[in-house]
Every structure is written in structure tokens, then in C-alpha cells.
Amino acid sequence: MRVDAVLVSTLRQAFAALQAGRIDDALHLSMQATDRAPANFDAWRIRALAHAQRNEVAAQCDALQRACALRPHDPAAALDLGTLLLDTGEPAEAVPWLRIAMDAPQLDPRAAFRYGTAQARIGDGSRAIEGFEHATAREPGLG
Image (cartoon, rainbow, N blue to C red; front, side, top):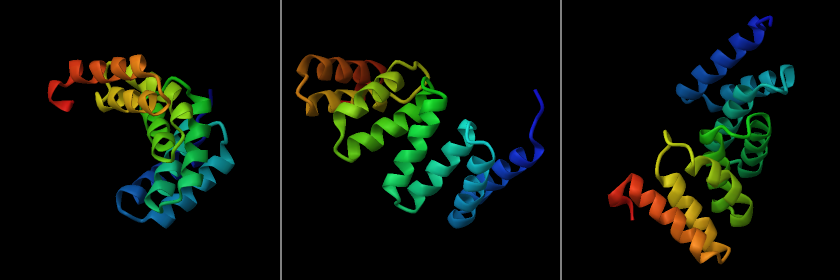
């Protein structure tokens, strides 16, 4: 597999711009990266982060959905998408993404808490309890 040096450079620049607070530059560069390589997970993740910094919720959600379509079992991306969907009033859509995040042992226990919250909002009390218990088992002071 050949490495696309231009893409790698663009992604590095986009991430550096994001870290430096140059959000417009990060967005522009990440858009170049997604145009160049629409199947690149990292390009969509950086683009989602740039949109988040600009409070562009719909664009952030689109970028996260594209990233998750490319790598559906990535727990960090799943947590971000699930949290965004939960925060925008779509708890039923958030549940499967938050479940992926909750089941990842290396991820923050707040993923399980958010899963429980989403389940509670759609009226599934037993699954809500499952999420809350999972969260407090990982971090007892969370509840």
C-alpha cells in the first residue's frame, strides 16, 4: 500500500492548526484532506473537531457520521457521535454509538453513563440502569 505523502502532510498540518487554535485553517485543511481521500477516517475526525470548535453542530454530526461509517467500532468516534446525538435530542440514534463506546474497556466510564441517560430518555429503564451500573462499576464516584 502506497502512502499518500500529500495527504499525510495535510493531516499533520490540520491537526497542528487545530492544536494551535487556528480553527479556520484546520477546517480548510481537513476539508482538503476529505476531498482528497473521502475514505480517510482521520480526515473526517479532524474535520469534525474543527466544526465542533466553530459550533457547527450539523456539519460536526455529518463529519462524525462519515468517520463512524468508515470505522464503526472506534470507541472514541462512537462516543463523540453518540454524545452529540444525545445532546441534540436524538437519544434513540445515540444508543448504538454509546453502546460501542460503553463496551470499550479503555474508554472513559462516562460513555456508560451517557448510554444510561440515552436509554432513560427513550424510556428503557432496565437498560438505563445497566448503563448507570456499568459506569459506577468503572468509576464508583461517578453516580
